[in-house]
Image 1 (cartoon, helix red, strand yellow):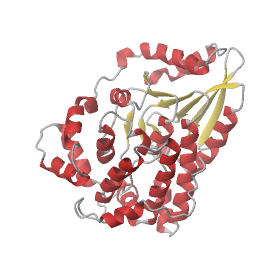
Image 2: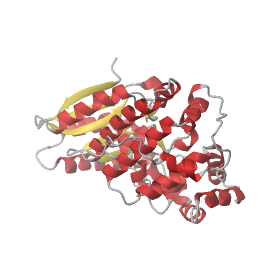
Image 3: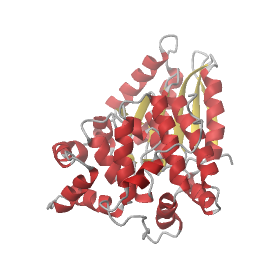
Image 4: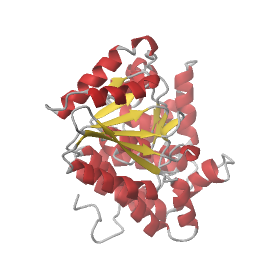
Length: 365
């Protein structure tokens, strides 16, 4: 069975809606290189096919849209001494696909139901119509595996309200549907049970006018019909003022010290404190520095910069150790390169931002 399935739904007026389904339910639809290599040419072909009016990006099963990139395969390549080549190959293809989605000329509906993390966030965020449901659970938890929020995270975290992007990058806190809408990560809330109704409505729609507007009308109606099951909890929005205060520091080290000193019975704040202290101290510095360096870059420049940092992560030990501890041996005891945020060597941080090639493979995006 293919890890990506493609179905063309005929419309009443003779057009087609292309459904692309991630099909790796056992791995929570982790985005593999094989998936990427199947999806990208289909998207490029659909973009020039006049019969295709819109694309749906969805997944197999109900648990996850996409739980992230296939980092276990990267871990094995790093362990075999092939980290630089494998990292460059995987991340180049992944970011090319993400960039294509961001710049796509036809509407793409992302049905982001269930878990959406890491690589799944990269697929989702470029789509023109991003749908969350009552089961949506978004996050960028890369700090826990010695990485940083890539796949365009340097772009969309920097464009969230205030400093919420920095805070969420450092903590990996979960983002549910109401907060996804507040942060600008999603466009519509629709009942998870209405996927079939959405496909039917798209098939019956009039596609003689603007395709993006046609999709918007279909989703708007379904959103209005979903009010009864709409999730209202929005802890990130509720803690917005707290996030602004705690991140208003001169350095990331001072930010973490402020978190450490904080006394609170609030479970959400307590969870945030645990996440920061358990994550990689080196990643904490990489996340803050990457967001600072990319704040005013174009989208293509962001992906080129991320390719440098991601490849460097595959050339150092921190990322592999994080994946080992969390996903391979699952002992939950990563041996981080630095034991505290204060002890991280700035010279080591700078190495991660040094291009390993004379010509960046993504400078032609």
